[in-house]
Image (tube, rainbow, N blue to C red; front, side, top):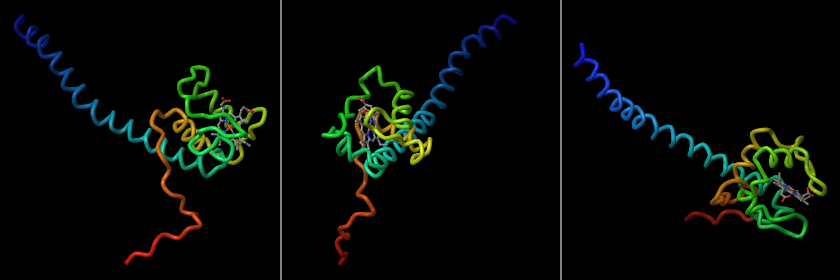
Length: 134
Ligand code: HEC
């Protein structure tokens, strides 16, 4: 009886390690890839939904509104507070609760919180046609 218990005790950490090793990698990859697509979608929304009009390209700041580039470091600006600002606007900022879905707002918040802000791909509604292919 005793040797069996010893064997179970010994193998337990190994099984645990194996579980962690097998589950952590794909789960992490899935998580970070989702976050990354959210950030990229947020970058496009930021440019196309009018945020950049006041906050500047990539949120660098402008005459109409403050820079948002360092907001991720500001502990006072929790994701919930950012969501509230976008939903309801502020003193001079218009509200977006009617023009953005919850998902789009979540993507914008992901973008504002991202460390290396993704650059949105060129707009498809661009006035300049793509160069002809030869
Ligand atoms: C008409 C100009 C305008 C537009 C468009 C605009 N904002 Fe703002 N935003 C402001 C101003 C001005 C402030 C400063 C606080 C206030 O007046 O509400 C602000 C503040 C913020 C803040 C809080 C940062 C701070 O330090 O106060 C966030 C986050 C934000 N805007 C995100 C966005 C996002 C995301 C969009 C696009 C969906 C957007 N804003 C569109 C003008 C604008």
